[in-house]
Image (cartoon, rainbow, N blue to C red):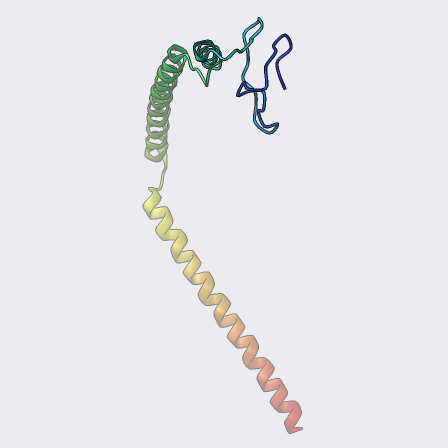
Length: 140
């Protein structure tokens, strides 16, 4: 398939171009081929110069990378300032407590152990009562 406004002869390499392959973008005008190889070469050079690949302007990429780096530094600075404020506040709160946190944890651990031992003792006592009750029913 030729671009509108172009014409090819049968001996031109693009004239028998397979359908599944893309045809190059042509500049405006008419391409006519003859037996002259120099004209064909000029036409092919024109086709190669008009088809361009992926082009990237590097300046915005560099600016974007610099902004990302600056944003990361600002975020890190915010983390340091906010974290230090939290640490100062936590230390002040701990100093104001009547009972130090280690003593409070020790006391709670002792309460937990006592409650666990009481629960286990109650369960064992209940279980022993059930066993005795079964034995008395079976024996009677």
